[in-house]
Length: 104
Image (cartoon, rainbow, N blue to C red; front, side, top):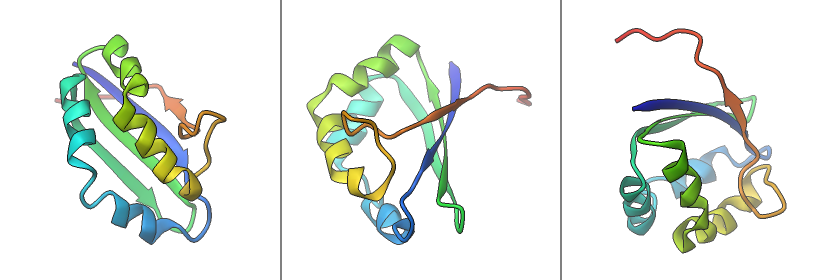
């Protein structure tokens, strides 16, 4: 299992709406994530800084990358883009984090 962590940024004032839209996420998106080998996925919010920290355990980088090609993921990005900083394809702008310590 590969541990993956990254940061995203909300636009100011969207913390509550971001949380509302994730509780729960769409069932079809949840199925896409599971079908593409994503486990133990969490997103944490640093309130006041509009920063999101995401952590997921994935089976492979290749499977993780193909999630972006699914219709459910594209619709989710479109649904969320007004709330956060995004790329031109509506995907969230992310900063990947390198693991420097792990304890089982």
